[in-house]
Image (cartoon, rainbow, N blue to C red; front, side, top):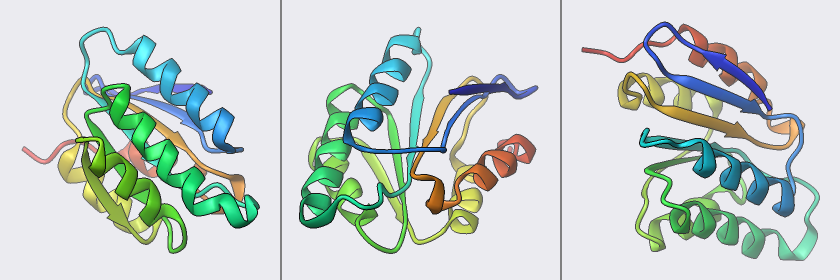
Length: 142
């Protein structure tokens, strides 16, 4: 988990190198513990190579994000990410589902607020390390 602090007070935690159900849960719990009254945003890409349990595992991750009080969940991907979004939405979190990192960058450019705490978590093959770089350049549109 690499921490990047933007001038507007947004903190981005880059954990987009590896993802499985346990590491996703650990990252979400870590961000919940770091919250300190800040709005939390989970930007979750797909976990790869989970086999037949993939849809259920993605849904469980989304539900956990909501259960932990994550304020905003952005699920990214063209496969099982929709299940992450469904789990978060069912748990009551504000949720967005986008197909790719470019769409996520545009969306987050509009949604992030000064002071937000953001975690970006996905399997390496999801390519969300580039999104972390994008987020470093984005500021909230006033």
